[in-house]
Amino acid sequence: MTVKVRFFARFRELLGTDISVEPENGTTLTDLVRGIAKKNREGCDAIFDPEGNFHKFVILMRNGKRVELRDAGSTVVSEGDEIAVFPPVAGG
Amino acid sequence: MIAIRKDDVDIGRLIAAAKQHGTGAVVVFDGVVRDDDIREMELEAYSEVAVPELERIAQEATAKFSLLHVDIVHRIGRLAIGENILVIVVSAGHREEAYAGSRFIIEAIKAGVPIWKKELTKDGSRWVPGEHAHGLGKTK
Image (cartoon, rainbow over all chains, first blue to last red; front, side, top):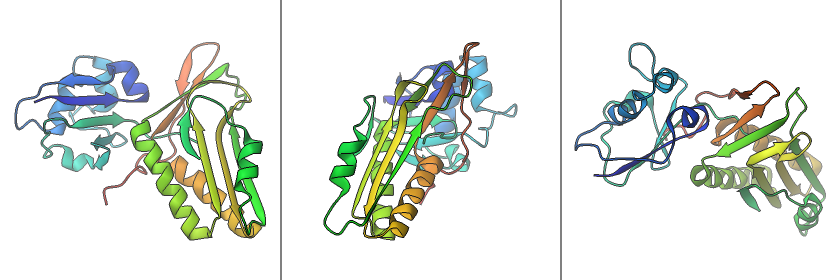
């Protein structure tokens, strides 16, 4: 299974973007993001709190649709998914 | 025109195109890079989500305020002080609808379209904090 993970803004600077990963079946969105983020301490701290939970301001999307943070731990990723992780928006 | 792009836009042409039959007012919002002791601004977008979101906002504003025409052009890339960041052109039969429609669109963009700004200063850079941590694309 191949899944693409895209980070934006500050998260992109810390962790890169358009990252192709091959998670095992049953991997949750939280596990997927944590697995990438833990490779960079600053990036991990930017996204997760000391308890390992997403910071409340983090926004997650799966295939262009918002996933609430409380659902990330029970959302299992699928073949071809595009996961986006980003901080609050600031356009305009 | 609804677009996210690097190139600037000819506002005069947008105004001309906005003058549809029945137009009594055209309102232009032009957001520009402010000189907040910065050198330049760098913008990035999640375009695959941001463009459909801009289209949805334009449709909602059109229905809500009886707009006759809507253009939204948001720029990305590196922009100098004074350059256009966001151009919104709306037309309506009357000024009340045109002003209200324009205001609705800019506030909706700030609340929920995945675009980010980074200010480049002489000492480094800083990301502009978002005003709405939880505004974007709430799960329906």
